Image (cartoon, rainbow, N blue to C red; front, side, top):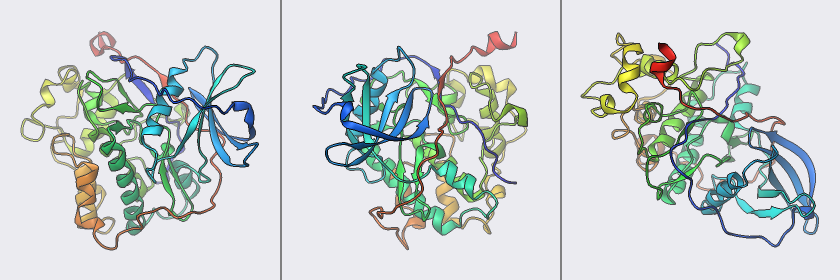
Length: 372
């Protein structure tokens, strides 16, 4: 089955805590010193453009708030996390925050990466066979290394998905981008319940208040599965007319998709499962008949080696206490030999697509009220 084009809005499923202090780093450079060259993408919060610094000629990417009255804290927050991740070769670089003197609008300046998103990359090759395991392994090594370095600096991305990964046509350049929903592990719970269906970890869907960086490794497992098959592993069942949109306020749909593949957790596989805030509400609606994991059925040894499956299964473990961290995943035999290059190659690839998946904010509805 060919991969279907779809919208991938990131959803803020609840608002339960304030964000961290925003970046206080100021730049003396004005946004007027950047010449707009092209629009790279547009989302619910901002517009990303390709620009040139008039004095130096340096090509950068700039992000502006797209709606009037939008809170500048959104850009300042993203700037803080990009700055924290500076030097990570697998995360887009931070250049600074500048202000347009004429309009007074704030602008986030970032590294320009001349590469499409992984979503566009896979869509363009939708009529070709899925990526071979060796290429998926090389990409995953870079993604997991980028995530490890990010987590080492106490940053959790919370919205890793193909649309937020930039990749060159030869797969040598791989970078995680768009840290707009990131958080710091130094913050105190409860945390916001955010992400993009169907890459959201089950503990977030069940409103675990004190989740951690393991929500990112779950998302990376979803990305790995998608690269191997060309299809989204936990895709929702929607009509073609819906263009992939689902009710992101209802966690039952994505949870059903997860448990139909991995089996419904029990006291042995996930002791905390029944004590999570939404479990009692959604449990009667979940597929109880599915107890056994079907993951190996979907990824037989002809498609994924035993060592590769060890990584995939470890990332896609419902119980976060048993899920692989990025650091532990990188130590598994699948990555031992041959090891991909530690530094990304400098390549010139295709520009980003003009449109990027929008984000929107929705409340997490109370299921009892929905089903009365």
